[in-house]
Image (spheres, rainbow, N blue to C red):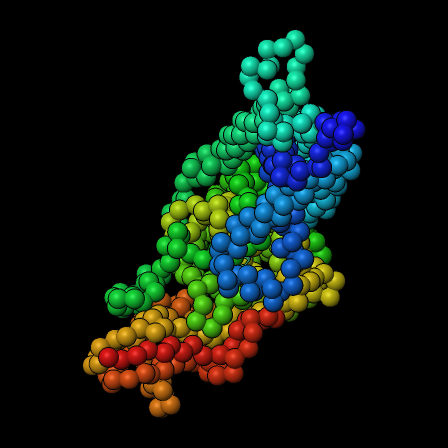
Length: 548
Ligand SMILES: Nc1nc2c(c(=O)[nH]1)N[C@H]1C(S)=C(S)[C@@H](COP(=O)(O)O)O[C@H]1N2
Ligand SMILES: [Mo]
C-alpha cells in the first residue's frame, strides 16, 4: 500500500496535450509579432507569410490559380494568407504538444519553420538578398525561446500533483511551514499562466509597433503620391460622344471608376513606391542609348490622354475582369525611339520588350506592337488622378489591344529589349501564351442571370470589346431564334469597349439570351467555348431568365 501511495504522489502525470497545445499559441504569436516587426523595419516583402504566400502563388498551376480567382475573386490573396496563418497555428499547437515531451525537438521544429520562411523570403524574385531571412530567423528564435520557457513551466506544474487530481488541498493547509504538493501545484500553474499571458501581451505590443512602423514607412510613398499634380495633357483624349454612354439601369458604365476597376496581380502586399526615388531604366539588345528616367522626367514630357479598355486573360466569358479608364501618360514608342530602339520590321534585333516591376513581376510585349503607332503608354494617371497604388503607382504600362499579362506592367521599374527566343517572362513560364491579343468578346449586363422580369418590353444591354480592332456589330439571340442586331452606342474609339442594347418583347416562361460581337476586321465571336489558358477564353455569353 505504501508503495502505491508513493507512486501516486511522485510519478509524473502523463503529458496533457491541451496545455501543451495552448502554450504553442503565445509562442507562435510572439514569433509572428517579432517577424512582422523585423520585416516592417527591413522590408515588408521579406515577412515569411508574404514570402511563403508569394512562393505558393508562383508554384500554383494555372488551372488552380484560375479556380482560386473564380472562387475568391480579388479576395484570393486574403484567403491564401489566412490559410497560411491557419496552417501555422496548427503547426505551433502541435509543436506545443511536442514540447511537453521534448523541448529540444520542439525548438528544432520551430527553427525549421523559420528556415522555411527564410528560404522563401531569400529566393523570391524581388528579394533584397540574405538579409531577407532576418524576419523569419528572428521570429523563429523568439518562438522557440517562448515555447521552451512555457514548456518548462508546464513540466514543473506536472511534477507536482494538482489539487484537482487529488481532491485535496485547502488554503488552511497551506499555512504549514512546508508547502504541500497541492499548493506547489497551484503556484506552478499560476506561473505558467502568467508566463503565457505575458507572452501574449508582449506579442500584442510588438505587433502594434510593427504595424505603426510599417504605416510610417509607407508614408513617404503616400506623400509622394499626394504631391503629384498631373499637368494638362498636350494631347487630350478625344471627347467621348454623348451617345457613347447609354443610360440604362444595370448596364456597365462607360468609364469604370478607379475604386471599381478590377485588380489582378500576384502582389500579396501592394507595393508602395516613393515616386521621388523611383527610376525607370531602358536597356538591352539594340538599345543604342540606354537611359534612366525619373518620375519628374516623365511628368515633364508631353502627356497624352487616352481612353483604353483593359482586359485580363483570366476573364471567363461574361466575367468581370475588364474595365475602361482614361489613362494619362507618355508614349512608350517615343521613349524607345529616343533610346535608339528600332522595331524588328526596321531591322531591330529585339522582338520582345520585357517589363519588370519592383515586385519582380516580368511581362513580355512584342516590340513591333508597341511601336506600330498605337497608343502604348507609360501611364502616370488613371481617370484624372495619379495611379492608385493598387493599379501601379507611380507608373505602369498600358497597351491597347493586348491582354494585361503581356502588356500592363504595374509598378514598372525596368524595360529590357530582348527576344522571345531567349527569354520567357513570368506567365509564359506557367503555361500562358507568349503573345496574346484581346479576343473579341461581349457580355450581357442586364438582365442578370436568373432574373424574373415581367412579360412585355425588357431591355437587354451590356458591353462588347475588341480593343484596337473596334466593335462593328453586336447581335442577340433569344433561345434558338435568329440573331438580331442590337443597337450600338456611339463608338468612342477602337481601343475602348462599346455599350449595346436590345429591346426585347419578353413572353412568359424560361428563356436563354445569348450575345455575340463582330469586330471591325470581320471576326465574329465564336460559339466554341475554350478555357482562359493559354490565351484567353473564347465563347459566347448567355443568360437564363424566367419571364413572369
Ligand atoms: N507588377 C505586376 N503587374 C501586373 C500584374 C502583376 O501581377 N504584377 N498583373 C497583370 C495582369 S494579369 C493584368 S490583367 C493587369 C491588371 O491590371 P489592374 O490590376 O490595374 O486591373 O495588370 C498586369 N500587370
Ligand atoms: Mo491578367
